[in-house]
Image 1 (cartoon, rainbow, N blue to C red):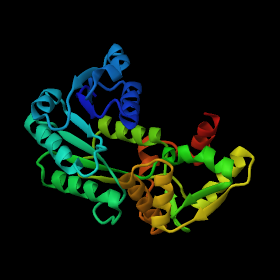
Image 2: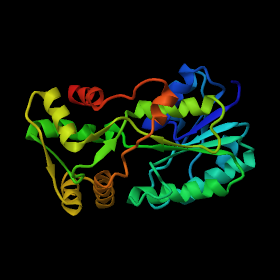
Image 3: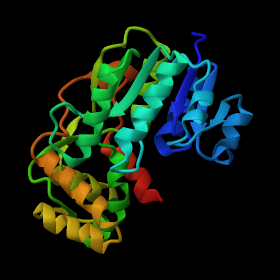
Length: 285
């Protein structure tokens, strides 16, 4: 494939992994769209075309998407502003004649009641009405979302949450990056909605994984959503972020982050990483 592939947020944790996956696939040319080119100077040295653009700067995105055939729009992190920001990128893609936009969303975004799903649903609606062919990469939870809690859980013997007996179908960030790269470098994906996630597991089972890795007894402590948000705030998270994460646990409890498809393994051609693999690395750090 010789089409030009671009990735927004290419200096971020997911974006960088997508660019790395594209390089492994010998895709090209590859465009990395970032706010600060200095953060990806190493990618430029490896032949990646680094282009600077920030949300709100339409002219910059027009320049960044010039000549781009396929675009991965990685959802932004400015909660409350994301639909407007994503829409601006989609409009730039329309002006540039982009042939495919892949958007990183959330499982069942069209009906998912989680707070985190609302802006994804709004963005999907904009793409659905856009003339640009598109594909939704509805990424499940990341195992890395729990990584910062692994060491503390091992130290204090408890993994707190508000997920009850619900199951979460998470995967490593690198798995979702590989899936995105597969979609960007092969045909037949326009119009598809991929529900992406690994094997489902409960929080008590996650506590057991941490216990086995650390050699210390760890139990799951289930609390109401509001109480869990308060715990997250006490641990230093801003209140809006704490509330979103606590609400995500309620989403796990109610089954909204359990993915029943094999879409992820089908796209990457191998099993998704287990929590044991990711948590082992977290404990080692």
